[in-house]
Length: 109
Length: 114
Image (cartoon, rainbow over all chains, first blue to last red; front, side):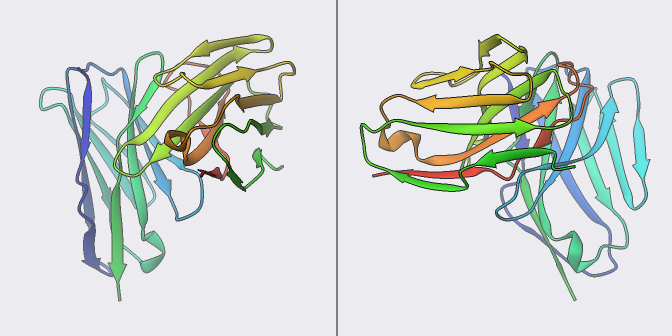
């Protein structure tokens, strides 16, 4: 069956460092991969989309990579700030999106 | 521009009671979705709609019904609530149904079934 894995343990990093979150998948050949941010008590907010034929996508301090051979996406936040603290969800799609469980990021001063 | 609005934000029900969750979007999106989010399970699709008057089952549709009588509204109904339906429910919408389209989410309805 299709499976999406995101690290369930929270990632704690120091302000100014680069945060790297991982999304692995199995039994899946997604055409697109999306990343969302979710704050406590709020709905997910779309951040970035990357297509299967794209290796990398950037938006301001955010960078996403998509390796269809490794079946993995990496989500990077450079120069991280306490305001970046949230849960980050990856979502894979064909005709519908399937979401991972998310990884909580905590950026400390 | 409100985006996606869900009502109510919180609700406590007794087992066997019924209720309807309302979702409204003001972005003229064709597609609308209902998800539930449980700890360790991620977002799971309950039902979705590809346009006014049409609905389809998602991954976990049992115990729920939906209606899309108007393009901007998508209703989720629980006919006889069960404790297993205690969850946070999110509504989302997208311009089209392909996964190359971002989904826009509401802030959820927190539902407890006693």
